[in-house]
Image (spheres, rainbow, N blue to C red):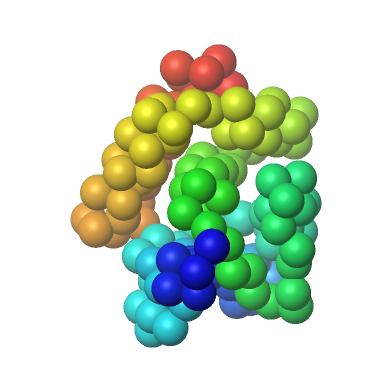
Length: 137
């Protein structure tokens, strides 16, 4: 894997509107040197790191540098994870995302990127479709 094909995933923390615990917002950058993320999703960073490690990536601090396939899986996971309320479904979501073949993975990846261009709230519709299709709802 050449350095040019790596993509970057990082996170920031921000306060919840209602004074709750800080939220972790994961940012997905198309290139390691990109300044603007192509998608941002509220998702626990620790879960994303565990999935990345299960996919064979070593985590470093607040950032991951991953290849194309792992990047797509992490992006799909984060986009759907932010809509899950049930903790019990998180493990099922991880299994589903790890089991996606390349065609289905690319389909969902492109659907989430299309929705992200319209704004963060537009991500909820394809996430709902993903959950219904894979019986995560």
